[in-house]
Image (cartoon, rainbow, N blue to C red; front, side):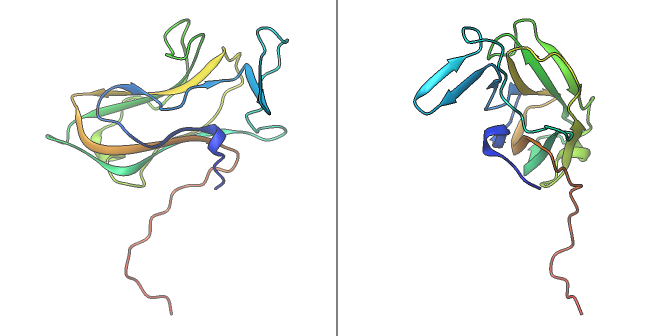
Length: 163
């Protein structure tokens, strides 16, 4: 699976309580060389998320095993668009994982959400929100990114021999 660093919302982001992704993208601003051009002043040019003639997907997975004191914390992951970088003004949830039980996402390598991005009128900013309930987590980290080539995460048993 290819991961473009420019489309990465979280790269082993430590998540212990409700938070938004480390990276929230402004899809109406382009940087070319040393100049930054805002679509607000230069027309309605949006950043290409990489899905011309193909579907694009949001992938969210556990990078480092997540723990909490009682192993009962729940997690909701949402992909959101809003008018501000804090994802609070005119925010719209475009995708959601629903409420996930601890065992479904706690192990390193667990895929939390893999979903095709919807056809929608995106606002200026896009990002991912992690909502933790019955927590907090005591450790753990999450990856979230956009890709055109999602793969199911197959984890193999270690220390085996192929003959």
